[in-house]
Image (tube, rainbow, N blue to C red; front, top):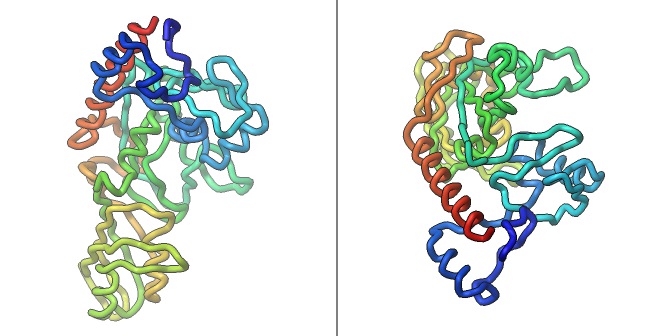
Length: 297
């Protein structure tokens, strides 16, 4: 423990630590823990965990200038430089951590992706990067959840993958609100089933709050609130009840609302509520980690 913390060091039981270091660890309320490299890559917004594991096996990932090929490798996630397929990413929660968020009004028929998918479909992130312009502090942009190609409405964009994950986790209870135009017969029994939750093809979807705003025969305008964001969740649930979706628009995500921005617009906003508190907690952890690292030097 005389050297500075290695990013590859595993958690060490207190019984194997000197008395001096035990005192240091006791001073730190939340000692740093190691995380799988693939998870760190996903939090950086570089790729999915499955894609990360492929890149690691192919020797295309470097951590602190060291090539890693073992998918089981665990690292300290804070302040560690990661290079993926030749591209260097800013350290996750470096000590000068400045998470930023924007809200964007996504238009329909735009693919939420950084890269083309082989079709002629317009992709989102190159457009957003042009709108932000040459800003070295913007970093690598990631979205909080996704809207599918045909959907529109509010999207939260951030330069920090772990902050995006904070917004997405169901236990953090960020409500997503949507307005949807649907075609089909709505009955009281179906509304009760929707509110209780439903299992479709082995996937359990939590209950949703659904209100009919306007009806004309089998055509309805409905308001829907959910607190989780599984892939194509609303479309899958509505298809299960034979309701055809003709329009899906997200109007709110947590404290952020769509009416704050014009169609296609992008606006940088401040952190609010639970997200602001979460960032403050992470800052405290980083300070504690930095103190621990210096004491080990």
